[in-house]
Image 1 (spheres, rainbow, N blue to C red):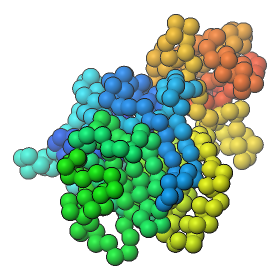
Image 2: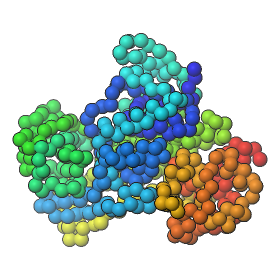
Image 3: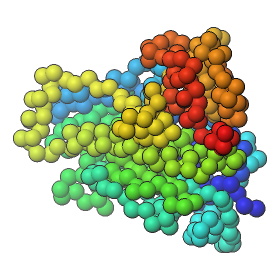
Image 4: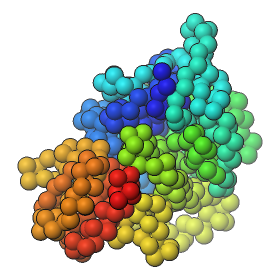
Length: 494
């Protein structure tokens, strides 16, 4: 059997991609070296856009039950003076979900893997070590039996992390965006509440020892502690060193160590996300310092962008050129997040006392209130704004309006295109436009999102399966133009 898609790696990104492709009905083979979910927490934050992906694959409520709403982040100096405040709203936002969430990665991965059991078209190989890739053929070994096997797929996606075999096989280099600091990451399970630890994440901008204090799910707390000159990476993660560093907050009588490990926080971006039939997704394509909590989120966005394009291509609805838009759209988007994280990291990681005093003098008198960024996609299906060819609002993340019955729009749309807006404009659409909507299985929702669209000074929109706007329209002619941008073989032939 030749599979449509093979995925190497079953972390959150690989599992999200497999669930989305499962929904699309394409045949998928997934290969994961570990037999069970890795038991220790790593990523700890996702946002409302990612929650829409969990909603799309039908797991949002289950995942929300195991997560908690995040209150925000504060940057303070060594004396506790506020430098930057990044509050996160505690009510539902434009995505019809709370904007920011904390989660436990093993719990999340368990839900995502269980979700895959719904799809007969998705075959998961656990304990399967992919040793090499030859063209579109994977050579792998069953670690339990030692048996070697081969699997062929039309497309191979590397969701296999920073040391990606798929990326190395493709010969893709990484662009260094200038951040490679070593930090000790400590997760604790508290036995009792610790005075002075609230629900906000704190970036402690102390030049003597920069730290991050993170409120995790349940009784978990995380400390991220920058290594300083003279620190020994081999010994600093030992219990005696950990408790010495945490003495101002807690000790072994009030908490237990879940993990303590030294990481190097990288900021890198692949110089190419596709070579032939090999594609990269998640950490295989980019890595970010954790100061925005967007590392995993970026990978989930990759999966949401890629899955529907692969499905259209495999169903014969679009040509292979559709995949050219994957990197062109995603790379500038993720770069905006990584570069912002690097800037915030530089602010936190100041270790020169004079430079720290200058920073504190600038920010503490009038603390900055930070807003979450929402970059548009790079050039792609919606055109290129730099060349003056972009569709109106193309590449912008859509809102998720509530329908008249109170339900969220995505639950009705599913993982497909949506045409929403003023019924009068939709009714005046040509038979050719209506035919294109039908060809791609678009959901037509007259009267949906009128208030949001009015705020954009427009009357209709076509929304892509990944919830980004293909384009908006003020009249039937503009809606026809947006419709022509839908990647559809039948339309191109006409």
